[in-house]
Length: 240
Image (tube, rainbow, N blue to C red; front, side, top):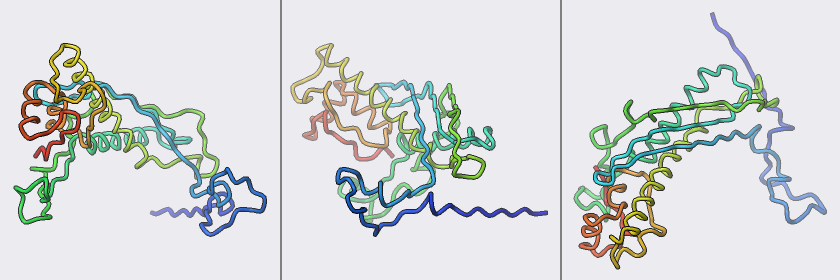
């Protein structure tokens, strides 16, 4: 047995003309998108909140809680949609906290030959495991968000929640900032820390090494100063 279905996108609703000129007398302060058409049949959005705990001595982190709300239109199968959101969130969380790509360049001279990819398998390229999933993980679907321009008022759900996983990264950065402020308030910062409680550079992914070195305690500060760096800008060269 088989079933086949066909769906034709309404060109009047979804169509974008890159070469279309602005109509005569069109307000100059409006963006080009307002006259060139609709590039997509609909937009989807979501929001996420994450709470984490970091170990300032090891750089390890644990995601205690994540709350996710996503607009999926009128869900055809809520169980499948929630599963897709959970998977995409964890994938985005891994991408922003542990999936570090390392290859031979000026920062990784111990890898040869130059340009060789080092993180080529599960031994060096780390992905989330069951233990990395938030201890409390709440996922909700936005209500009363029908989409009359698609099949059964649905919206795509496969990839949009991916970036919501970055809420874990930003929660980690907030925790690191709190640790740095705490050190400064206790009078443990030094002159070369460059105002350790203020802005600091914290790159993706938030690996254990980056967390540990960014917390700015006496041990990490001494290591950073030994190579002529500043706690506000130092970047580890690879956690693998």
